[in-house]
Image 1 (spheres, rainbow, N blue to C red):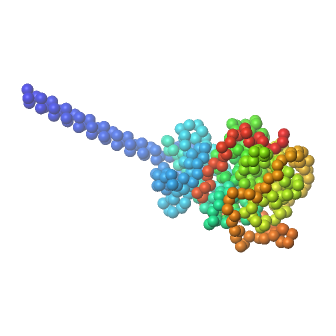
Image 2 (cartoon, one colour):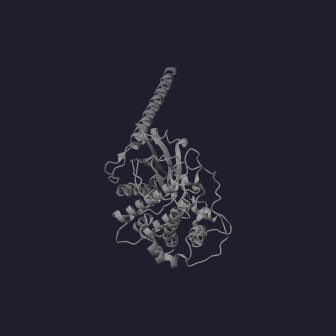
Length: 429
């Protein structure tokens, strides 16, 4: 009897050990299979020619396992991380969240499709991507000079302020990128979130339009596309906010706001921080322009190193781009020509009555009281002549290498609601 008991105990222990070993082997097998599956690229993605397909492990290593210290910015669809590939190349890795939902998958495929179609020196190129069963990642060049928004508004003693000639070049470069999307792509592409935070600067400070996450394809036979309203407060065209209909002219409106930001160095909504001036940014700018007090708008960082005539001309282009009715706004091809000095006078004269139909009694407000420390401009900056005007009118657009910086990817959205600001910023009805 005692012997039988010992046998039973031995059998029980042996069975337990065998069961444990089987479970352990099963867990190890499952984990290995899961990792292998997770590192396998999804099939059926859009064909992107020579675009590199990264493994998830490669991007884990590049970003130090997506360390928080490597976060470049945060967006509605996920975070962007600074990474360093095995060969030493710096990259920016956008890791989409909610990839199991339709929104994350749609974002991923949209950016892949848009960037595969849009190849231009003033548009951000995609280095590669990673798609697994539960991960979607996009890999971009790292932009060392950051975004236009960061360079206009974030003080950095190690980086000089953007001089006027550079701002002109940025405007023309961004305009050419949008022109390509609107008129040279087939099907044409509407960006739908044109803003300073989405215009990056390469090593030579040339403009590179990025962030195609909200972009939509539009057949040349179509005039607009209707979608749920998404974008950045202060940059949303009135018709897009009120009806959900976007077109190329939606981008033109956003570009006009970008031009005003290049002139003033301010965010669109900073114009509306005064309680008496809430939401009246465009009306205030029109009033300043009409009263020929344009110098009050100019970014204090420029000092006197700008061409007053050129500032006035850029402001006119901005006001043409931000007219209330889409049909009254110019095409991007016209915008490029006007920024290059061709046809602005005629276009301005034709639209003058539309632009200046209202005369609100707005409070006097100076735009020269930024909260940033004053910076000393580089000695290479062009100074005014005796009439306050520089002779340098170069507007060439050449592109150098690309890179992404530590502050390129933050959403530039304000905490205020769309309804409370965007329609007010759009001007009179």
